Length: 228
Image 1 (cartoon, one colour):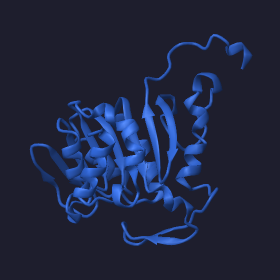
Image 2 (cartoon, one colour):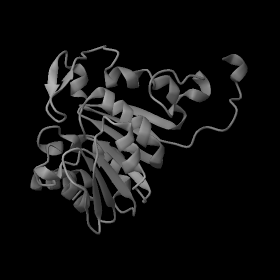
Image 3 (tube, one colour):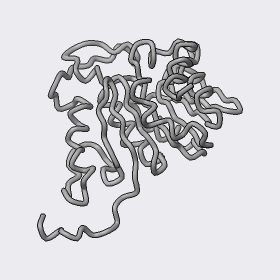
């Protein structure tokens, strides 16, 4: 069975909307298969253990050697041999910092399935991308909310969202402006609200998610800098 097939099978077994609704099995294996046997950890914001621990069980079965960290606004802290879940309000930098200090494994994968609020998605990326190891993958799910012109997001006390295509607060637009930062060696640009651009290897837009990979910041001097 391929990694993609296993992802889909486990997603259906545990009834996670990663497969049943979003069909992330079409894009995630491209980035995540390399970690299938690695002894490392994954962090998911918005693990939602109150809904049957669907994502948690998916990750535990899909990556047999991985440790899972979960942050969620609606659950008390919980720990076992292979996972730790911490109560955390993604909208508060102080909560994000407090929980970050409890992570003591190397982190290869970070998945933001939290509030779906663009401002929170940006805050969390800027706070947590530094703990991702080089070669790691950061996924922002449910970017559909950035296309909402109005509405309420039920995950965080019915938080109001008012964005829409091209809106300055859209997480899609914010990461579009970080594209030149991927080529910082040539562009000398790290414009925008996204931090750590010199460490971003790639920014890929897939259906309902943004996938970012991490590299070592470039230390060499560009040999054609006089042409810039």
